[in-house]
Image 1 (cartoon, one colour):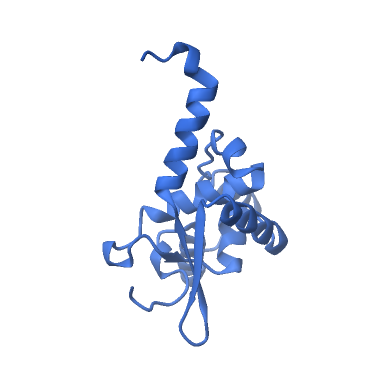
Image 2: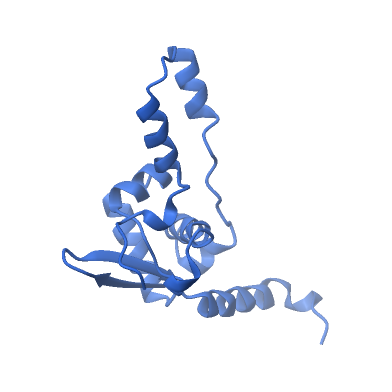
Length: 149
């Protein structure tokens, strides 16, 4: 795994877009600024993750981790990094909400974490096999009577 700065894997994130916009410092009216907030990039949220993750907050964290995975280089083997500030900027989750969501996801085997380097940087990886297993079990429970075979 390449030792990169926190957040490098999510260069296309909302926080990166905001940083880029601030560097150019366009003059905005209050109305324009409000519209930018209202029409900001929506967060992908998989409702089906709620029972699996154990809470709406954990499901949101898992949904966004799934989204972040899309921009990870292949050599990272699924690992990506985000700071607490980036998670909060991108999802609205506070530090405590993030910590609780991460704990719930680790306990269910859905999220792996490791610290790399000095100073230590926290890396995350979604356990896709476990997520699929849990989604299949949920589908059997919810739709088993309609499934053939």
